[in-house]
Length: 100
Image (cartoon, rainbow, N blue to C red; front, side):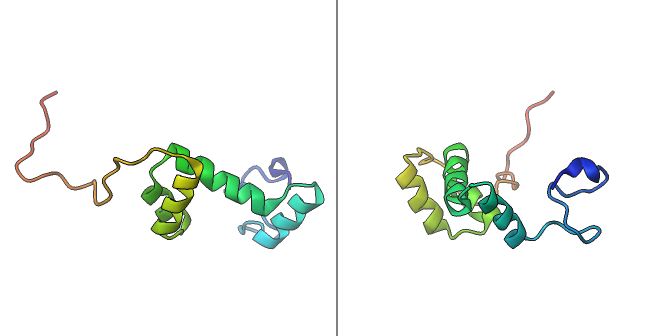
């Protein structure tokens, strides 16, 4: 699992097959061997993300349902209550950027 053995790999955890990442079940087994509870770690990781980012962003990025992410946010005690979901790449009609 040492990426120093393959510094040209684009994967954080390169697999045994060239150009492929390590399989999730293999990583889970390795974590179990060293005593890391993968399920608890995954839950802690999403809760930490919810404290740092809006729930809709985390849900979309990780493939969670938005209601699940919102429930986890409430359980965690996060305060992202004023986030406006939607397409933030569009500019409002009639808006012009300030001069530089």
